[in-house]
Image 1 (cartoon, rainbow, N blue to C red):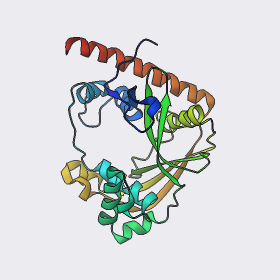
Image 2 (image 1 turned 60 degrees about the horizontal axis):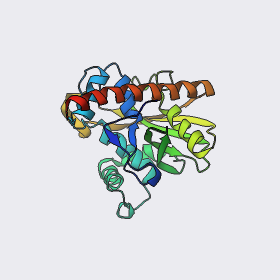
Image 3 (image 1 turned 90 degrees about the vertical axis):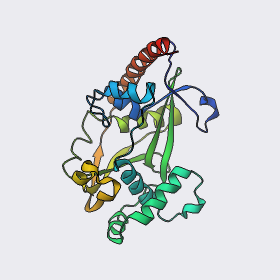
Image 4 (image 1 turned 90 degrees about the horizontal axis):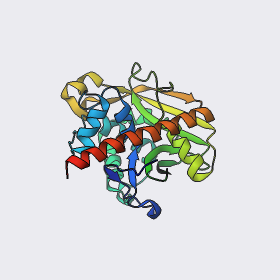
Length: 249
């Protein structure tokens, strides 16, 4: 693969990757998507506007709600003051404040696996892929992703069109030399999607009474397909970014 140039570089705690061109799985999803979530434009157009030109899109409420849900499930027994990461601390404080007793009672039914927001960095040589795994067992054999969805919007999570679990499985295999044996979505019912879309924001969303668990199976062939998708997409992004840099010095 030719020299990779990307808009972002790794700035995390792993010194061996410092300064390397970096992409996240969510960035790849945006690039290959038929329609961007924020603009409604083709995905690569939204990516270029956001990451090449620096456009910012404020959260409509979905992101904050999902992050608070995950923080409550996995960190509810932790004193926020002891959390060093400001983003995580803010999410937990928001969860403890914003969820009602009834909502907390629903979320209390979920037993976390033990490793929340585990940083996953996959080294592909010319670049790294960065992601955060929602929840993992101590031996990395059980992987879980938390989603807040309505009953209708949860369809398709385990279809061949989603690759998030596959990406994180590549990390566990390639970087940790361990084996994932169980892949699971924990889907928490989300109410208020319509009002949120109309501008109601985080306040319009709430936890419903239902929780669904859906397992996924991932084969070695699927992992090879996922790795090829990552490599092909990053090359496309890099080629476009090099052209952008050439005419925007």
